[in-house]
Structure formats: C-alpha cells, structure tokens
Length: 175
Image (cartoon, helix red, strand yellow):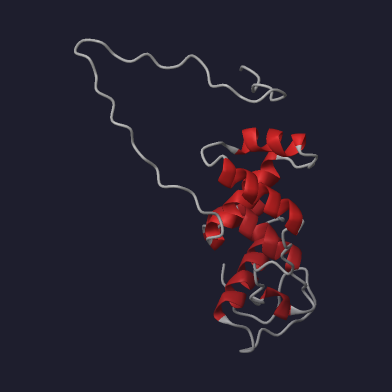
C-alpha cells in the first residue's frame, strides 16, 4: 500500500509534506498499513521486513497529530552518568600492598588476608581494583616464568588433587 493522498486511515486530515525525511515517510507507511489492515502488527512487520521490536518502538513514539514523532531523533546511547569507583584510597593502598607481597595469589586468597587485617572488602571489588591498578600501571607484577620440568620416560606427573586456600574460604558449591 502506498500513501498517495494526504489522508491517513483513522486520523484527521494531515498533509504529508516535504518536511518529513525519507525514513520518516517509510515509517508513516508502516503506520498507515497497520491501521488499514485492522491493526495487525504481525502482518505489518512481515510485509515490510522489519522486526517486531522496531515496529513497536516506532508505534509507541507515533503521534498522528505530530508526524515529526516519526523522525529519527538521534537519541544517543551514551550513558548520561558514569559512576566512578567508590573504593577508598586507603583500601586501594592495602590491596596493592598485599598483592605485591603475594604476587601469585588470586583475589579470593587476598580477600581473606585483607579481612584478617580488618578490611571489609568483597572478592568482586578486590578483582575490579586489581584490574584498575593493572590498567593504570600502578601494580608491578613479576613476569610469568614457565618452569621447565624434565619428564621421566613413560611417567606423567600427577596433577595435584586440590589447591590450598586460606582458612575461612569456602569452596564453590559442586554442581
């Protein structure tokens, strides 16, 4: 169906002038088709080859008395506010100090050590703080050294059964 007249079904007389962009005129055709075919949304978005989410997004924006509502308003997806890290600087210093003392320990073990010192810190916060320190270059970790182990012929080294964790750390649930 093409809109050749200045009238839309079930709407007041509205003139479709040259003020609408090509994309807005196409969206207006979607709305006209939708209204002309008994408000059958599935038929509309299948006819025009668009997704249902796209159709409904524009249907909810559509105002028959103000056709400018079909124009792309170039809404930015950039977040309006970005939260800065709320980790106190003295806690960051403690995390850095403990990590440099135990460079091969992970965030779970380091969290236990910090709790023993009286800090209340979650494992997630500790991991994010370590990542931030690495990105900024403030955490100096020793290079990874790959140990070369001589293998005896015919014998494989057995893998350790479990890794030790500090007291107070629970193992993840089996599942």
